[in-house]
Image (cartoon, rainbow, N blue to C red; front, side, top):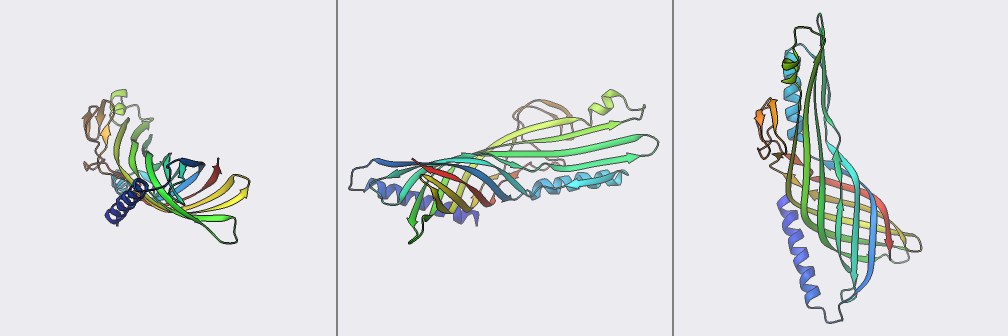
Length: 269
């Protein structure tokens, strides 16, 4: 599915560039459309949840009570700028960027025998896409509205952090022992991003339009790399540039692919 969307996006953009190159009229920008809004995406975080469940099972086997929170979606703000061209009716090129942030995921665990012990693990991730694309739109008859279809291609910049922290009232635990359970692993990575969208724009007043957007985003990050030196983690001592690993020793991955829903305001200058 992801491969077909990417191929379709490439073909669409190639066709748009061909049309622009063969346009017979004078080439000039006739309008600039800016927009900003809120973006909610149903994304896939199954690999992260699998690792968190593994750690939670370890905590249970050690006698801890576990409260879990998994992650399955992301949200954030986005902004876009589109340029209309006089030589190609209803066709525009545009730029799109923003920020998506996954809900924090992880678990809190607690065990009380004689002394209180807590062991917590949390994961956070975010992604910023920088995209360029083309859109084709047409007006709806008898309505102050238009619909459009668009494809975007570009690069995404992802970041993540895996945090483990332990505390206890047991006097038998030394600061050095606790330090082995307390660390934060920051990681980052880049990947190709492709988006396909269908949108509806409703004229509210003057140059202001309400934009409703439905689409799909392909944003799979198969590799992440540690961004600072960290000692004493479940993966051993880590150096900046090392491949980021999950708690079970597998490669840490992120996947912001999924359905993309957003609403915002556009201003046609």
